[in-house]
Amino acid sequence: MFKKTVLENGLRIITVPETHTKAVTVMVLVGTGSKYENKEINGISHFLEHMFFKGTPRRPTKTDISEPFDRVGGIYNAFTGEDYTGYWAKVEKSHFDLALDIISDMFLNSKLEEGEINRERGVINEEINMYYDDPMSHVQLLWTELLYGDQPAGRPIAGTKESVSGINREKMVEYFTKQYVAKNTIVCLGGNFDEKEAIEKVKGYFTNIRSGSFYKKDPVVEKQEKPALSLHFRETDQTHICLGFRGYSLNHPQKYAQELLAVALGGMMSSRMFLKIREEMGLAYYISAISEQNPETGFIQARAGLDNNRIEQAIVSIVSEYKRIKEEGIGLEELKKAKDNVIGKMTLALEASDAMASFYAIQDLLEEKTETPEQYFSLLNKVTPEDIKSVANDIFRPENMNLAIIGPYKEAEKFTKLLNI
Image 1: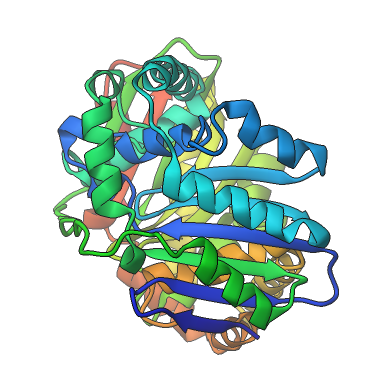
Image 2 (image 1 turned 180 degrees about the vertical axis):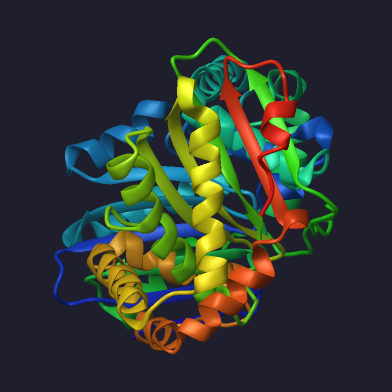
């Protein structure tokens, strides 16, 4: 079980003790990401994440941060999303104080030196190049832009080269000072530790965290009246696509049915799309379907790398699987398989202390309630075949349909005529 402690300044401490492991994870999550940025500073959340590893007054260099973790075999990293940014370290339990000391120091006291900012700008530009050079990654960026357009939700988390070039120390310090405050921060501990003692230590290490208000993000605007297409020409040997529909948000009561619907369609090697598109027709090496749910938005998406010469056949076949489950629904046995798959994967993942910390911290930040894994599994198991069919009919409509493509094509018409369900 987990425990949540809220300090007077608003800082949330979530503890998830697990005695069966010899590891402990310290994670600090702040409620800011790319959705909180305007176009001018697009990418600043991600840029700032990089800068936290460059040094503090107590640890002046990059090596002063990384080497102590390396000496004890620790795993440490950070991540930036649309709604949050996180910093974490996972160590053997006897090094808990080390992890908490370094992560809190990075979070509260990073120097953000101009010279390091200018050097890291080049690193981020290369990261952006990496995403655009990889069609599997690039098509995801096209998908996001297609759904949400010229608003924060439609822009890349890493920013663009143009926006990153304009982010200087002054803008970074302003953003950091405003967003990285107690009420917008969660410290989550997962693994083997003494809970009472650990909470007191967190209080001590985070004594100097700033108080105050923080910027709220603008609501995401969704507007679509007919199927939409984003076509990007590139001389590739394989066509990469994202094909799917707008769906439910994190707070929608049918989010569990949406997740199971995606699993049945393409979340397993024995799922419908995998068996049809890859195993039976031989049109793809990779094909899967996912359900993504955010505080305001969500979607179901099939992603695949397909044979250039049979791309139209492949799209028709994927659409037919959406249509078939919409019309015919799903049987009890197939639904049980999808449930058991989700429960089994999550159970295995949550054996790791870092996954457990992330599970609780992200829920607390983004959702109106926090579920234990057992509560989540219980709600998942309540989904019926009727729920699946109802959700499919609600989501799989022409006005919700979107297709992003990267491949050697310049004419959009042959694809738009296929977007019919």
